Length: 114
Image (cartoon, rainbow, N blue to C red):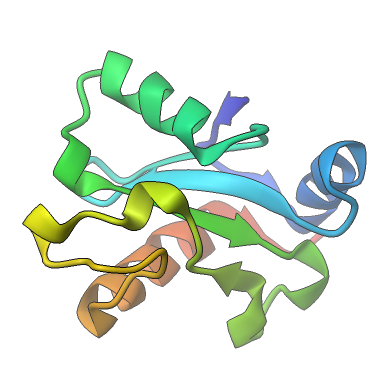
């Protein structure tokens, strides 16, 4: 698992190939602008960021598909940690479109083409 300041699509691809083939899991802290990638479970990244002082309500799980970089399918909003009725999110997706946009910007600011 890595806390990412910046990373290339090539590096993400290598991480994905080691774990799930074409995909890797990630967790973001939308308040602090943090991105953690390359974990077996989203809950692992969630726990890592909580230990760093992040608040639960700011953490969102997603999957990254490096081969789809630059397209909508690069980021998939699908994680059990996203089910939080107390934050008005009732599914594994991120239901709030503004929040999705914020997450996309955060991730895309940290990932660059090779």
